[in-house]
Image 1 (tube, rainbow, N blue to C red):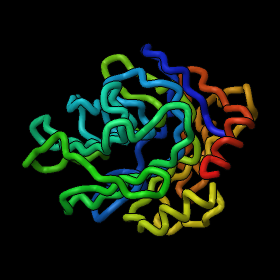
Image 2 (cartoon, rainbow, N blue to C red):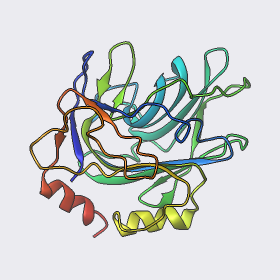
Image 3 (cartoon, rainbow, N blue to C red):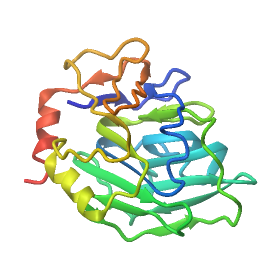
Image 4 (cartoon, rainbow, N blue to C red):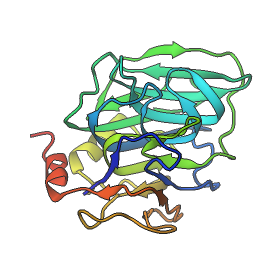
Length: 249
């Protein structure tokens, strides 16, 4: 079904906190991947409409803590962005072309990166995108081990939830191949790609209700990095899920 967030900025902005664990820490060492489905109602925040992040950063090159983010944004670019902090409060940042991430449509977004290699790969609906590096740094890349994995919300001084729906968010501790990413896109959740799966949040629940309580957002990987919601994000309607399933038709 997906989990829907309300796009509001407040100390208790809607989000899912998934903690920190060796299985999801520093996934980019030796190569990692993050992917998920996003249905964005509107662009709200210059810091990004977050799919997942581990740390406190904004896509407009604002580093407050160590870590990384994968997001749609900004309100000007309307692109897909990946950012990772480095030492000395610097960062590495890449984005797809302007207007490559539209609102009002389900899109499957994926990023793969080995941090010993210069640039990541970003995919939209299984297709590799041309990237612009909009932020550079020659400083060492920071560890994110002390940071919390979050879904659906950037974590600036005042957290900002996305205005939209997320589904099937995953982390891998390896670089997925282009063929695997296309398979995940086409299979709509039935792909069976589990090698080095560090976390997977299907984000399924009873429409109109909210996940509630510690560990109520389930990670179905072997590591059980379950998430705890803040605020009242809602399980999305079956119609939203149907649009995701047939997004390629």
